[in-house]
Length: 122
Image (cartoon, rainbow, N blue to C red; front, side):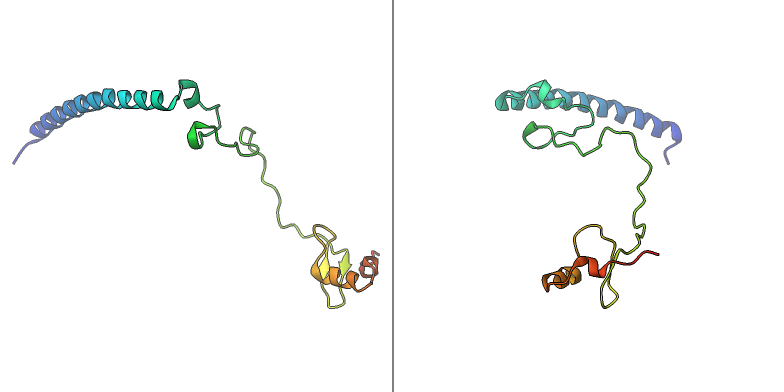
């Protein structure tokens, strides 16, 4: 059975081999990249995207997300219920925000006024 010193010696030997292979492959890879850059007319400036922007297709910068460089804000409150301002004949409710609901659009199309369904505030 091999002992710890033998294993550590093997690890060191393999690590040296790995570093030699990496250095050899590094130079070959750099040459390959340089030839492709020349073939496609790519410059170092094309590879350096502005901070916070990822490179997109064909070396063009991708569109930045809205607010990508802003400081994180406190989370928005979502789903907060709003009091109904309009009620339909079948109990439907609408806050008056966003698009007019189908039930109210249909009633308005029949000639009734939107204000007829307004909730009376007390």
